[in-house]
Structures are given as structure tokens and as C-alpha cells.
Image (cartoon, rainbow, N blue to C red):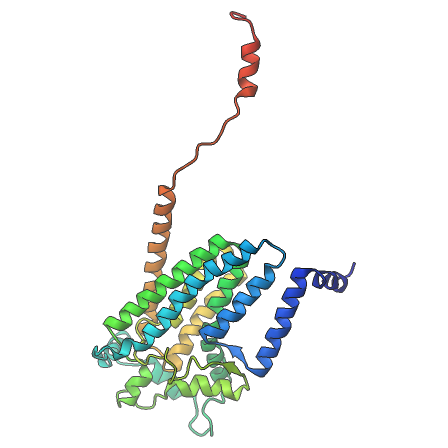
Length: 333
């Protein structure tokens, strides 16, 4: 049987038909609406995909999808909107301190300023016409997709691994949120708007306009400054960089050498795109990496502690084969 014939047979199964219908509907959505970046459409399409992949199994397994994902997504919604109001709590915005830390690391230079001065041409009608601008925009936007796609794939393969991944994502998100509330720090483009970094363009010109220039359509506007989730002073730590590093660290033991190379390059490319676009200082990225290390250590130790607290059920040993022959022997024999 050819591969095409096997695919046709598979599509005729209930699960195959459900997944094919989901793929067709999602393709139409991409064409008419765009790539879902916001939490609402992403959650809807992920849940629909999980339900489709679960067709043919008991209904309680479908209910378990909701019981697993709704608390996870609920905590993420809470994070989104709390992050959006973190800069309205009256805390002073730290603009000069992160800039001073960046200059201290690089002996007076600011990488964002250097990169934008040397890698875009003011003679262009639109300065985002370089190929690396397109690459940076796509890499930046992938942050809004990759983490959740990985979560969905892990769930279909191992509910246990999905739970470990979801736990680390939530811990990292709320550690960042707490920092945003306590220490709201401005990104490079914000400092440029205050006249502290001349020549640095606002990141929105790089990312949003690049994506528009590529003709890509997106549902929602998560990178738009007018959305409730937007927070102009949520720069320290860089969760963009941290999530990518978390993904690389989590998947590292499961990957082959070439996949590890790609993930390492992706992590570096994300950091470079954030710095180039004026979204974050290198200092923000390094702090984000430090948060990843702390979260991984805390999560691993908590899971080991929890596992050690579970009661161990002793294995039942069948002694009949050993006892019966001995019992059958006469005493003294």
C-alpha cells in the first residue's frame, strides 16, 4: 500500500477525519483572518486540535483535556492582564539604571544603538527593507507561537511531560510578573524617546511594520501598544529571551546534536533580534537567562521532593513457586 493510500485510509477513520477537518478549518482561518497570536484564538485552536486528536476515546478523556488546560490557560490570562496593569500601580519607572548597567557591561557602548546605527540605512524609504530586518521580525514573533505549540505537542505525547513544561512556564511567567511590579524597567526604545539613546528607533517600527511588509496576516494585535496586555516597562527580565532559553534547556536532553545546534542558534537569534529591535538591553536578556536557571532548579527540586513524599507501594511477591516444593518434602529429607 502506497503512502497516499495509507493516508486515505487514515482520513476515513473518525480521528483522521476529525484532524483533517481541523486542518481544513485552520487553513481557512489563516487565509481569512491570519496567524493567531493572541491568547484567545490560540487557546481555541489548540483545544480543538486536542479534541480532534482524541476522537474515538472515552468522553472522560475529552473532559480531562478541559480539566488540564483550563487552569493552565486561566493562569496565563491572569498573567497577561496583570502584566498589562503592572505599569499603572504608581511605581517609579527605571529608565537610567538599566541603561547604566548596559553601558557598564559594554564599557560605555549600547549594543542596540550600535546595531541600529550600522545595520540599517536611513536612505531607504522604509528602513526595515533589509533581509535581517525580516528575519528579526519573524524570530521575534515566533515567541508568541512556539511555546504554546510545544505545550500542545507535549500533551499529545505525554501528559506528564506537558505538566512539567506547563509548571516551568507558569513559574517563569509569574517570576517575571513580580519583577515588573516591583521594578518596572524601560526598554531601549523607551529610553530613546526620553532622549537618552539618540538614533534608536521604536521596536514597533521593526517588528510590526516588517510583518506587514511580508504580507503576513495576524489575528489579534498582541504586539500592538493599545492592547490590554501591553506593558511598555516590562523589560526586565526579558521573558522573550527567557522562554526561548527555557525551551532549549528543557528539550536539550531529548534532542540530537543537530537539533541542539538549531535550538542554540534560535536562542542566540532571539536575543540578537530583541537587542537589535530595541525591545531589550543585553542586560535584560542575561537577567532573563538567570531567571531560567533559578526556575529550572526550583522546579526540579520541588518535583524530586514531591516524588519522595509519595508512598511507595511494596511489590507483591509470589512465593508459591519457592514455598510449595519445600513444603512437599518430608521433614529431615
